[in-house]
Image (cartoon, rainbow, N blue to C red; front, side, top):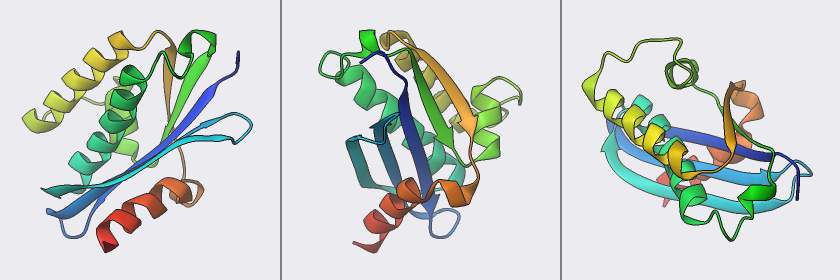
Length: 141
């Protein structure tokens, strides 16, 4: 493959906290969809849903690294529309909330299982529509 893998994640809760869901889109640089994930995650906050969406994507990559031929992928570019999450995962903001800190620990564990460089990027909400639609799809069920 020898190209970048593109992942968009989104999480949301209706109410804060409230019923929550995650949406993940994994695709090649040429926009070939590899996997879509849309699922409810119970009652939680928006921030926890955003983290859970990222963890869901990383768990999928870790569990399917052989099938995805990740060794031929140069970089995994993950796009998230939450400034807080991107800045915390990139180490620019401290994580004061103990529940969110647990998510960071899980993310770091999963990163060790994935044999490719991962870059976390902030994306404007309007450019994250595919992942957002998957969140709403799960919440509307």
